Image (cartoon, rainbow, N blue to C red):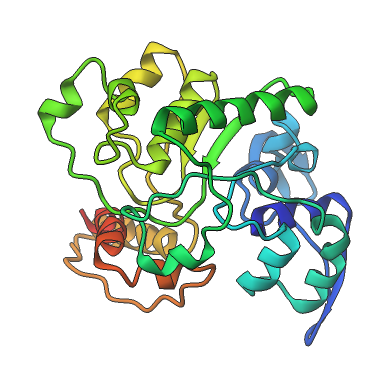
Length: 295
């Protein structure tokens, strides 16, 4: 909901009042929209000066304002209600976005309580029933429906849902040439998490899949399936806040001859993350992902 709100606020040029005055949307932090490339040097009054241009003006990137957005959620709340529940955006911006987001409803999603904290069960009122194969078929149908209705050239599926428990897939299972499709056909939920099901659906539909959560969704068998279908898959958690800063600091310290062995910090988890990560199996996924910062 927050990602959609950002795109809509920029697309419609919304402004909103805060205690610090009026604010407007921007894409600060976006590599494509904010970063520049040096094109060369020109002579000026102060000698040679760099000539730079935004990356998005030099390469054929899609403007984020032109994106068509759809998605799935185990909660049937419309996106305006989701924004209000998340409490991320300023209240006045929430009111400005309400007419644009109240009519946006998520498609039913896959819910497996064995992969999430028990705190999430109360939210699960919008789920796809049936076996893994039936759920896979429905996700694929949703992707095709979205692509056809919006007349799109390309669809990218991005997992931004709650963190799942870390899966301990042994090498023997991973090496099976029939994985993960055989496990789906056999309805073996111990080997197929909801995020893996979305990854498989994306691959079979020829869509790029990006995993934005720390669990090991993109396992060896998923990579093998993606290579077979010539589809890109990527990601093992978004690193845009604290983790990004820590990564830069650790790189600087190591370059200075100092090797950190531990990082301790506080994180005010919003958007339902705190509730879900209060469960040890889900927190383990986050712990493994974040620990790579100081590897």
